[in-house]
Length: 212
Image (cartoon, rainbow, N blue to C red):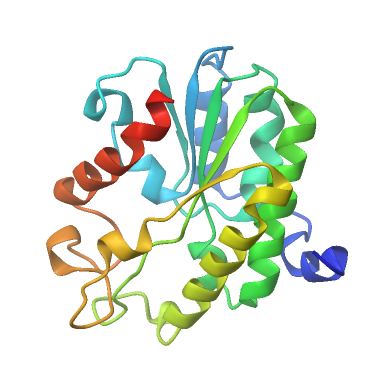
């Protein structure tokens, strides 16, 4: 990955947490992550699911924060990785897209984050989800016209997976409406976040990775 430091610059600015972020992090500080745990890490797409109940697995810990970005996740991973969890499943980047950060910078920042996580806990197996499609006609004007950015990020994340020692989990094709090219309406009520059926599909796709 050439000139990585240049590409991650826009995602590596000083991080300024908001009140929600601080509240969630203070909550997480009261909870343990231990060896053997499986951590779901990321933004609202992670946070808005009861993963351990949906998947019937008490090892699964939710460490999602609504509105989180790559920089926000990087800021809080030392606490998570210090417990040497068995696996971490990462979903982050869509909020960076909405902030008009170039897609190449976002992809390279995610890979840099994964490298950092490996350094913090070499025994933890890392999994990176593709970003999901969305439909900006509902809300989220800041995402309008950016589906191609998401596809480009996903291509880069898949390309870099072997060299950076993470498993890439391709979700996009399972959630996109083939007729319209946006997030299928059966999986969302606002064009971005998922319904119960959307999470049920995600859980089915994750099950082989959880079990391996």
